Length: 317
Image (tube, rainbow, N blue to C red):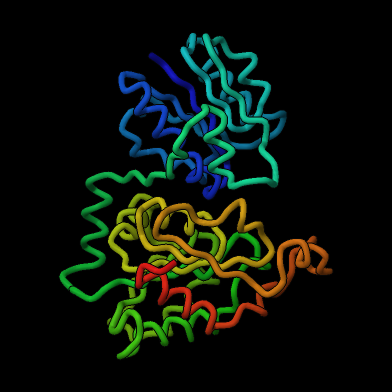
């Protein structure tokens, strides 16, 4: 059986689609999967156990990404095509059955919307797949140090969604001090390669021996493997936040100018805090539709984040 799974370009959306992919794998354990997605999202699927082929769709002139997909997939007669992009390609490619996601709505979580495409109940949680080599590299980075790891993602693909760095620093210090929720923990700072310069200064919140620099330095599979061993992840609404939750790390997402009801981290050990202003208020801010030089999350206080982290670690989220 051959299944074509057309996923997303953005990292976060791709991670959210992994639960649907895993459910298909469980429903059709003999199937071989071809997965099509953008280059940033491709590492999400590299260790998927039933992967036969990964088609990386790079944008270019004259709809180059869709031409790549058609060229790679037209010669196969598919048993099932699941298209999460709502593209015309799913109607052109030959298949016995097709399921096409129309783009969802602002009602309900994106994972619930995707689950409805295949009438899945219960809703499948996202998965993070990583290889033995990824696991070994994560173990090398952690080393023999028995102290817990506090993972933090201080960047995002849009500056308006980033909580001010100095507040991340204060939060880290309050959590790792003696008497804090994670006393003596080491700090791992994560980011995409393009966001390294934005994330890197947070490492100065702790001494050199207490740092794990993952700001754009390691492949996504290694990050997933390390997150699976982290005591807590705190970060802005981003793809790394969703990866942390999918890897099983207790995950606290920080929200402001994005919809937490639709994109909150998914899982039993997840929680969110958000700004005093809700999304509808923030979207009326003059900086919302621009590329702002500063954050729109100034009204999220440190006390609220620390308290939420403490509840999450205590199993009270």
